Length: 207
Image 1 (cartoon, helix red, strand yellow):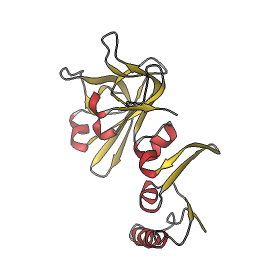
Image 2 (tube, helix red, strand yellow):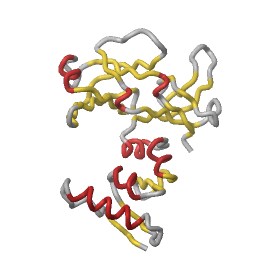
Image 3 (cartoon, one colour):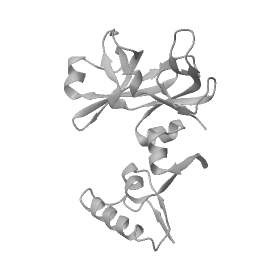
């Protein structure tokens, strides 16, 4: 049995992929059990069969790596996976609102609801930052979520810019090109609209 505590954290960018590949080969041989402690999603994807997310000394969630990273149930796990998450109650149609989720602070999010969720169940609405478009004025058209937000922060990540703002009390991120950020004249404090199609929002049970 191996315990690997941040095994790649001190390696440079050229050495880390080679060591990760070596560890993958060793661990996939089926002759060893390993516990890998990491903050890097790549490590989890390459090395692990199952993932356990620890928050404040407690297990926030556990399951297969695919399930934990693609269907997070806690804000902490969503941040690790790089996804947006709003928690609240599942809505199953009615009153002309369609299906989705009402967040804890009353924000309604249109989305595709998991078949196992019932109306009123505790749930989460999850969507990727790259699925969020940013507009200076609210657009019209196909069913979508439009959230008016104040830009909190801009973070350059290679060829894209991560724009964060608040939807209710929850921080939400949009990923746009640097050119789009310049065209929109985005700065902290600017008022914009985050727009995401309902088909890009997955609603599933929180527990």
